[in-house]
Image 1 (tube, rainbow, N blue to C red):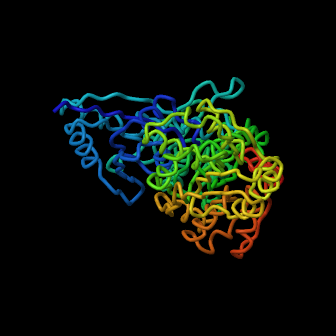
Image 2: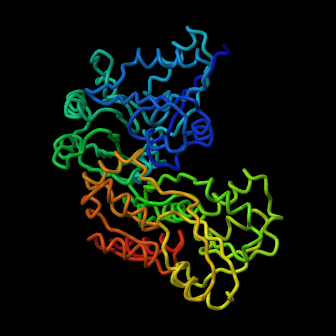
Length: 495
């Protein structure tokens, strides 16, 4: 069997957009991902569905796998001919033990590649507004780990007399010792120090004090692992550039999928928010029932699409029946929503009608303008779709055949992280892009869903949220991803 390849890959410091293009490319095509906690875990959503994900989970006093076990897994999976991404926070060669893993792979004859990542030692400081070097006060920097092999001690006598900026990683457990030893060896006790926890993420917080007080102040502010400690006059040069990103520090969950979610995510990230996209819906196509109607398309004068999923399912069924767009000649296409319209038109078909507002109520009013007696409508939808359009068709004396093109199942994959963040108060807002999204997430999260601000894409979703006993902070004026993002920015930027 052909031997696979291992990619020793840096995931960056935590902010999603600080991962490299190469790293993301590898994640998307990997057969196996062996990942660390913290920043690396968030990128698993980009992996293939069939990708095997192994949590190396290293953290203080709680190693899910030890280093020798990780090495064995990398070698074994490569011998199975697989492409393996070893996904590590920051840069794998900056206190990431990437060098040790490469040595073991080399001994075993396993091909490997190293993909550098943005290291936390400078990026976290930058996100806190502190330059690691500054022409006026520091022309050099030195980086140390506060966690030593076999508890070996740092050379404090040398470090205390180094010029420039001192940066310590993995040092919170020993911060009081580091401070005391440096002062004992001659470091000025009034040296400015900043400790930054969860840098570049929505949980980022920091404390600044002089060297003799920093350990005590950090403890008072409950600053813990993971943190970066930066010492030197550069701390005085701190600049608050995050003020230009009004949503920095906010964690927003978008209960959605597809292009609509991507559209909202992009806008919110531009304003500094940390975004988690999570769909509470798993789509299961029901091609069999739809295929029967596709055999008799000529009897229909209109096809109504109310979601991107309905479009995808319809054309999947067409393809399986070996039918192309020529079968739709003479049939009008009606779509609710800009994204639904785009999903149809990317297949080379022009949409005939789109209601002014993207909801069933507006669509039912629009139906009066173009439908006539004798029309016959094919309506592929989910089993949970509103009956408003069917009722209107009956009122107008028009035949509408509703087909369950897909079913909405509750998606539980990855919900534990959101559940944990909600309980800890680490989610500021959740936005729901359909009634089904809210119902499913309420089922999964329970009353904890009320701990953050809730946003709705439209009136129907808003009504569902209210009916289930929760409050709606605001509803989008236009029922699109951009409309939701605009409303969230409007509400949260001054909070």
